[in-house]
Length: 322
Image (cartoon, rainbow, N blue to C red):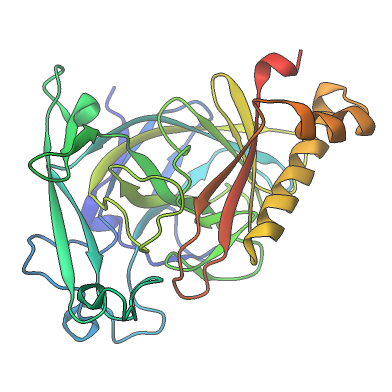
């Protein structure tokens, strides 16, 4: 039986919109594939393709038509008030990725200290080479002739249709998902998202071949990809914001400004998770996050881009939850 698929040419939505007609209908546990565009919808192919707004298709709109997503995917049985469980099963990236910097892009886009960052547009293309499997699943990203690292792909933009708003895939964020650039949205992990509409109406796109904390410039290793995922339902439970379950830890996420508010809110939501689902007393949960040497704050996204808030995750290993 062939998996259902959203082909790349259909994965060109630029908003999370509850009015969209579903492109796929799946059952819980049924795997499907979304072929994603990169954040530029294919514009950046070589170092000669600069991030000049006047040359980029869709940049005559406000906000620009960038960061395309595929969907919505309608999940049978999903209802408002349930929780959507999204398991990323596999990501196979394209043969290259890119990053683009230049005037008024990112925190150094008006730098006088390093004029090359703000005086001209620069696009870097990173070639990918396949790994032992013969594919990009275990491939290598070549940053330069001397620097390379394993491809570590993740889905940068994902979520369900928000309750009442129509929100762009470029700078929309909320408890429902959005452009969050959480590098833990990767194969082997499960994302938990509150549902606001029948069918959940799930979207994904904006795969990165790799990224460290913060995505400081505003773009990372942007690439096209083929993403395999499956959706499940958690009934009778409400969650305040996106959560992530990794094989060995759990992460509560939040997007806010300033950054310290995102960090504080994510930590409070992790404390709530410990109390409501793992039997901790409020006192023990509160004290655990200040004493456990393995408690971590992940700063996933902290780039100056449009209306984007900063994204943080509060993480604790599962070994402390039993």
